[in-house]
Length: 331
Ligand code: R5P
Image (tube, rainbow, N blue to C red; front, side, top):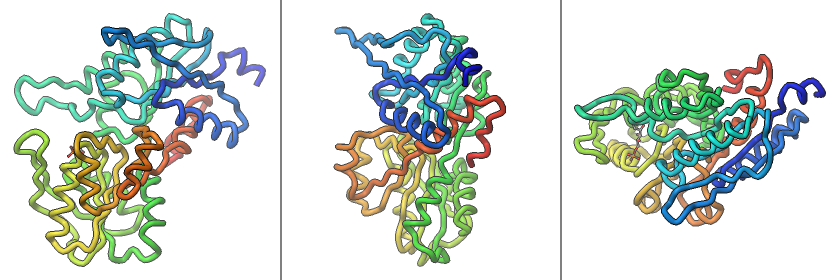
C-alpha cells in the first residue's frame, strides 16, 4: 500500500449523471477488495451562451484518474464536449493518466460509410478522445460492433452485460425454459442473441431487418427456431426510439409468440419510446449504462426494469488498477 501511494494513487472522478454510479463502484471496491479509491465529483458551470466549464474541486496532481462520464446526457453532443474539456482540464492539472469509464458510447452506430457523403463518426469520436495523450484506456460496455475497438489506438475494455441480463432473466422466466426462444432483430445482433441463448440453454432465431428510411425499421424474414407458442426474448444492444423492438415484437406476436420480453444493454429510450412501450404491454429490461433518475424509474416501472451494471463496472475498474489485472475473467 505504501509503495502504491508512491507510485501514483488511483482516484475516481465523476461528472453529474455518473455521480451515483461512481459512488456505488467505489463502495463496492472498498467492500470487496478493501481498497479505498477517493471519489471527486466535478460540477460544470454553463455560460449564458451554452459553453461549459468543468470545475475540478481539488488537486489531482500525479494521480491516476478513472473518469466516470455519461456520453448520452444531456445530449450526446453536449456530453462529448463536456468530456473533452474535462480531459483537457485533468491533463493541465498534471494527472498521471486518465481511464475513461463510459458505459454507453454514443456515435458508434455511425461506424461505416454506408451511403455516399456520410461521416464515420465513431472513428472521429475516437480521434477526438485520443488528441489528449493522458487518456490511456477506455472502459465501456457492449459497443455496437466489437470491431469499433479498432477505431482506437489505445486499449478498450469492451465489457458485456449479457451475463447480467441472462442472470436476471433466469429469475424472471422461472425454472422451466423449454418454451423460450431468444430472437435477434437483425443480423448484426446475431452473435449477441446467440450468446444470451447459450447462457439460458435455449434456441435462437434471427430476423432480417432493413431500414427503408431513417428511423423506420422493417423486419420480414425470420431465420431459425419457430416462435409459435413460445415465450420470446428479443435481445439487442441499444433501444433508441424503440422502433426496432416494436416492429420485431409485432412480427413475433403475428407469428404466434405467447409473450415478448425485450432485453437490451443500453436503454437510450428517446422520443416517444416510453409511450410506445407503456402501450405495448411488453416488459423492457435494460442496464443502467445510461443513468436514470429515481423519478424516471418510478414513472416507468410498469414496463421498464433496470439491472445495474455497478458490480461489473466496479470490478473492471479494480482489475484495471492492478498490475496483471484481468477484465476478461468477468464474463
Ligand atoms: C441498430 O442496429 C441497433 O442495434 C439497434 O437495433 C437500433 O439502434 C435501435 O434503434 P431504434 O430503437 O431507434 O429502432
